[in-house]
Length: 432
Ligand code: SF4
Image (cartoon, rainbow, N blue to C red; front, top):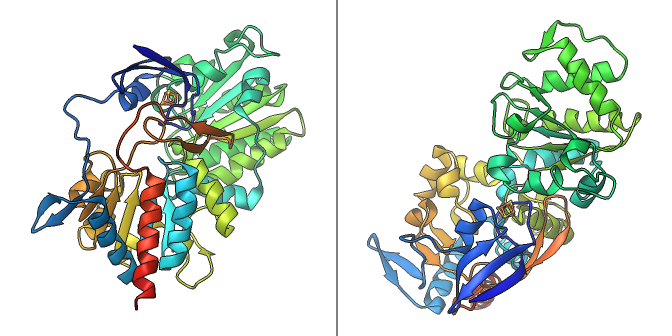
């Protein structure tokens, strides 16, 4: 058995880079250091369907075809579409994203990643009011106050807490005892159980709570005995801890981006963080979900000036989330073809969008059987980045890390598949 060290986990935005894979006969058979989610990504689950050949649906049946046939058909669909949508991208590497941007430009498509159903509201907010951030290394070495707001890393980013709260840092030699942890969540989550203070905010009322905190911080009285279900004294106690932090960090997640107020919740959380810097040092980091959702936003920003929801239909890039997001185009019945790569909207989009997906041609660049592949007309299986293909990924706070290839496969990497589709689209267009 071979032990491959310093492997980077291709699952969540924590992007752990200390995984050891146990490899036997070109197969990953075990892991060390990986959390349970990661282990299941590395080690093939028995009974799970892994596509090894491209498939095209004919009369309702999926028929095996060659890569060339599947790519040609996909290119025809995209070249003929008037309003194609290229969606997904967060579970593949940045070099594939860059080719995706070219494909979007070539086909006049809208290109969007999972940010539009995830931390897109955070992007809107930081474009409005700024982004006082830092790296996770600074959190580990300096943070004495850690706030998890509307996120549950014990379940969604399982090693986040061990790597940044329990870990001993340069200025935090005792690790957890040197830090105060505040969790804001309506539920008593497993993360909340580890907190020193749990602010059990009423659902959908985070905006009011943050406003009360800001008011108190800026020297005003909190007008009510309780705000969002939290007694005034408890709010004041939490603000005093944050105000006196030597180095504080606010991590936030779906509890803020997906609840009432959406990007306005983040606006006010960012402004609270900015206000806290009048007293000490405070930063924030979004708990980005997929391992490379951040990478797509980086690449799209360099290439087009916009991070997601980029519309090339007018020739130049245009950006207006609410109009040019994947769900906007599907729920308004605007898109007439959909290419999904490294994502599963069939499982994770609202019913109205999924219903519309059944009415338009769907191309899925996807290694596993998923609700999206159940709807797809063409399935093109790629090598999995981080296991069978390498490439660049960006951690939740924007640190780039190179994904490693651990085992060999005959399947094409995402980048090559998108390149071949782009090449074919150009051929089809040139022939007209
Ligand atoms: S915490 Fe996230 S990045 Fe780290 S091993 Fe688990 S799934 Fe992978």
